[in-house]
Length: 602
Image 1 (spheres, helix red, strand yellow):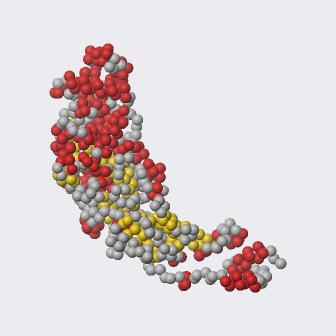
Image 2 (cartoon, helix red, strand yellow):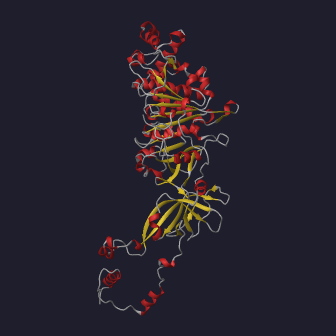
Image 3 (cartoon, one colour):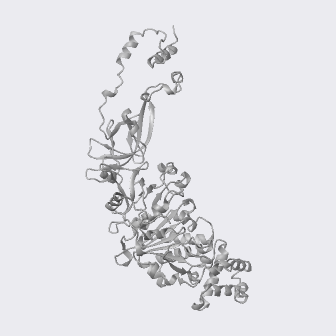
């Protein structure tokens, strides 16, 4: 008599057609036959209820089905005829049946399970070979992450009711289900189209779902631009393209100024432009997109086209360096008088805390004892080099000799002679042109030396931060405080850095304070960077909205990407992005416009 194990293997091989003549097997006992007849017949495809075209399967229970306040387990059986149509990330709906609400979810995981108890490592499967095993031996399951319940009135609420086993699961059917399920704003600053796996969700007639950042000053709360925005991604993933399209949407918008008796004002946009690209906001695209694409954008309230004379380019003058970008620009210089308020402009990264304290004292005393008409870098040089002027500090012990030497080596270097007081319009006198309502002021810096760029950028940032955080007794300070300001800083990691220098610490502290008061004082930061890991932690902690393009996983984690997107972001192609904005919507993927709404490229 054959060994029972061998008989079972031979029978299985014969059933699958791998062997033609299997050895005869003993007849089963009557009891065994009775058991076999009692086994339920496996349901065949023709026995199952037919799914509607939008349905992907039914709620299944492999181990358990549950929802709770902190986690859920909802799995869906995917029949063979739907398996090739289902992908991770897709949005689906489950009608509860016993209630009118719809459960809105996305597919978090797909998996295959064995239909029977034969393990893949058993002798049968070793003999069969993987190429002879059909997909029908397996069950496909989709694990869902529920996002909300859609009420009959079209409102999203928290998930509090459980779907019944065998409930039908379908794809989203219309734009309203996506907007309600994801709790999306229906107007605001247009960012792109709600997408799944790189493709915009479309409905009948190629209707797409627009994604907006809340921008309504009349609603409860504040426009999210004043809770700050990060645009981050690796080089070549379209950061500048996205930033230009986003900034163009802000031009002309209106905001309530709570601290000025309820005035409604349009913002002043100031752009730090290290690569001389943002003056393109002035002009229409060189290669206009198809008419249909423009109409689609305008139809959802998006802005298209250059801003024209609203934009002015301000080019800093530095000896030996000349700006050769935009054909129309205004030159300016950094007056040394700004060092009175911002001594760190001449501190660089080399002074330690003790040395910086000494520099502050020397700067303060210089401006107190020197006539205003002599507030120049050249005169300050003379002050520092004068041993007679320095002697009281050394004798009193207020400044140590070694400390004075370090300050002199830093401050008396050549570059500052070509940066301060270069004969053009002082920045402090151009304030009305720079900080104007409904204007765009672009500051290119790629023509400057590294030291010149640092001084120019920190001067502009400091003027804005101080005017928005405290009462500044200057005309320029009062002017900046008057209007909403959106400050966009490209290559932000170079200026709001994690570097542990005294200058970096002061700038970061200043901007963290300004960011915290952004809602109240109407200051919005837009930080654009390919190195978010180099932006200071305290600055990143103030960012509410993160627009994340393709980036490495470690960078995605540092930039604050939701966990379920961190592994996907390295594969995001140009224009595909994740938006994480807790005050605006659930984290989700969007597709930016394929075209730039203003001039892009030289």
